[in-house]
Image (cartoon, rainbow, N blue to C red; front, side, top):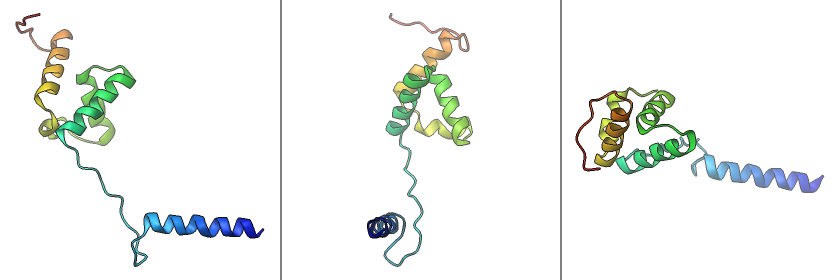
Length: 101
């Protein structure tokens, strides 16, 4: 019985260390700032795990996070833009452009 009590006290102390400031006021979880690099990593992970195209992965991310598609344009870098364009051309959403390959 005493061991259980000690375990609970330790668990509660750890909980307070993680979720409260020193003055015992609850802290909000810090949202991670999305950068173009982090956004690319997230989209690449969706492409790998969910087997989506880059275009579909971006739309899926927007849908899951309640974002409008035009709000994420600042996170799309040149390489991601090229991948999305390639996917759109393959799906005949855009006219095909000339390429060297």
